[in-house]
Image (tube, rainbow, N blue to C red; front, side):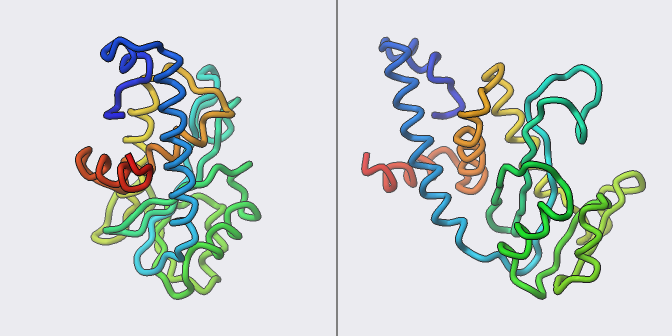
Length: 197
């Protein structure tokens, strides 16, 4: 699964496309199950949080408010792993329970200036904001790590020319896995361990 689609892999290996698609799906399901276990870990230290929008109709609005987009909320422990969750919307009432369940109190949380993060100013976290209309980083105050993840994920997913909503969570977890486990050699080692290949 070195960023090769199932159809391309089937072509290269001389097998039926449906066989490759089924194999890829099973590997993605295994990844999602293992990451769900890892997701129980509580994050602490320096955490970057941000939301992003995937898919949907390109016409009209882009980003927040764009039609048909899948909303994904992400948290990245600096020098650690990223954690993503698909959310219904980016309202404070939706995001704050995810944050408080996943991040240990007294952690340092970095965000942009989106209003849904206002509650962090009066919470048990140490909240730092970066105003992207003025600057992208001010020493340790930035969210460049989570932004890097969004860029990588969108680059990987773009080659599929559209992913149905039902399958999207598995593809998202594959992107999370790729980001968290470094080199393709290390990813293969982890997959062999998880899948007993």
